[in-house]
Length: 610
Image (cartoon, rainbow, N blue to C red; front, side, top):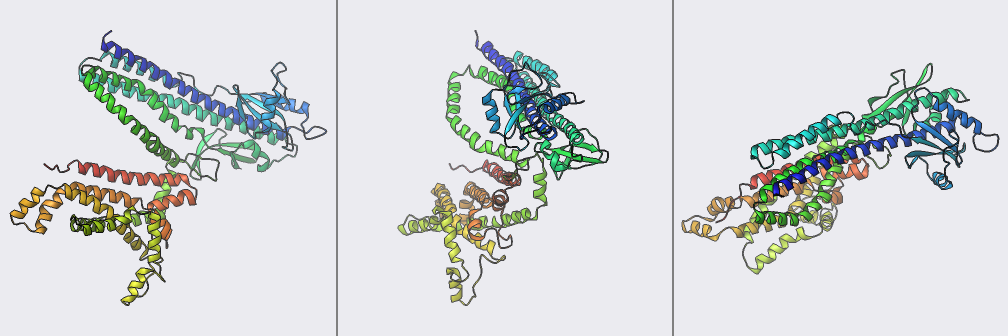
């Protein structure tokens, strides 16, 4: 077998496997939403039966005949879709021939408050009227609310994917331009196929929410009609909500809709309790949390196109085995670092994106999808703009520090022991603990017995409240940063100065150029790459300043030193609003990414020393 058929066969297998894995994952995700609906429906049904079934003559149990009647009437309820079985103890009530529950399953139900999933059935504990013991269980099998394997747009997308895959595989070994066009078409078809599979998952998620809302609405209306005390309160109906919100409503449509409630997307249905009384049942739409499935389905759908690209590359490289071995070895060495970046850099970034689209707090169990509401809140928050302004002002220390660091590098570049000692003294603050440095400067800035105010008193200047005044607090932080960063930047400039060939400076000296002219015409132009590096890294470091603010001022006084990183910390750990904090972190990421990109673009024109 020649090389080309072998690569083509591998690409064909990868294409088929990619399509099957995508379909299987989409189907599995849809079945998960079906199971989630069944668990939620089982818990709601158990709460309904506990609410409407009369008690037994003795004890906290329910009247067994009445429990049987209520269950039978539930299955006969118009519009009711789940298949319900109720167990009293371990015995089934509706189907006498159904297998009973095992004592072990019933014991496990006693240790849980919500529904569980067991062998394709959702089981919810049926508590007694005192909610002290479990006297039975409610079992619900999931209904077919999800599209099939090839439902919706999946079948046309799969046909298009198959045609594009065969077309791409036929072009292998041909002209590069034809191969490139075929592979691009295959990749586009893969994206469409992954998107179609995701649409099926989203439809299943939406259907699970809508179906539960419709069933819960029927149960609330039945409970309102069957309760012996007549007019139920919202507190009476709350157990049927299953964690959703029940609020006063009006006679709007009784079909589930999507609305913005308090800035949060919600699935809403109106429930008619009596001729003049309506309530509104609100819950978080399940499809709002379906976005991560897209991040899984698209890569799976693109395995086939990537394999085809790999087959083209392998076929071209097979004629150059030495280069192929070198490339494989290079990627082998890069693999650990790439894996490290994927786990500890890319994955947290994706998590931050996900959290930023939700109202995510440690004090709330619900984490609803809010879209861009967190970003809109940032734009409207004056404290964020103050933090951005303070951060921008803080970055003004970078050019000042660079000038001082370059001067120190020029002055201390000699190889004498005094110059080495001075360089060590200048670099020492950068190598010291940041918290220790901040505490030392906190003592030096003290308004009553600080060293700086003591020196000022010698020349007749009154004490200055450096960290307590809005006019001086940010300047005081900038001075600390200047003192610390100067040593690092001086070291980088020293390395750049030592890399400049001495022949250039000697030739300029022979031609009569003075020290200033040599600096302006030779040293500074040849230091351009180093200068750009120091400038961009200094900007990045300035935007990430946190410890000095946290230790010295705490963002005060009056937000005078509140910077972006400290505002992010406050949003996450003081107010526990991780959605807003993630949105702010993405804003900071965009700024830093822009600075890094600018650095790379500028350094593309770096100077080469011959």
